[in-house]
Image 1 (cartoon, rainbow, N blue to C red):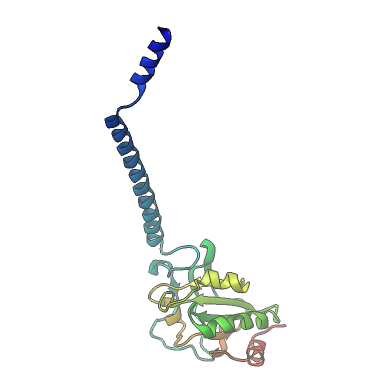
Image 2: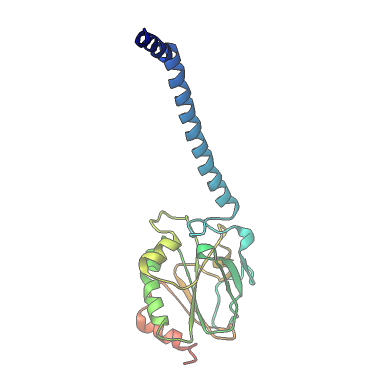
Length: 218
């Protein structure tokens, strides 16, 4: 009798078909809500990055409001004897890259999708390293204007490069202020901020060495 009562109690506890359908429906609803929440969260992160002016890896242009240069954007290319303008922009990994006269500097402007830039930058870094008193500072511009497997950060990481990279905005403010008309463009600037030479494309190591020697204090 006791055993029979237990069996009856167990039978009563089993959910009916209708109850099982409701349980399964609720489980599906919870799963759908969870997926929607994940999608909303990811979208929110994307919006936050867009509002902040781009990601810290340099994969998107900087916000226009965060980029500045002390030269007219219509002034044209810098010439020997011109004063190189001070500038500031977001850099990689959340840093800010600001440049002002004060030390002999190689300023180079490049685009992540430019094959000549990809080939020349490691050479330029190696040659500049031969002159300990000379700094190498770069501007990555025209970001996203052509298809590329690289963001500025991924290119730098793959090639093992570590010089400062200022991330230009979508209006190419820094490139225009520096009078760049092709990539890569390099200026050698003395400690007073005066342009002593320039080059574009893929100059040879010897040509680079001769240009940089013009501003070296060694």
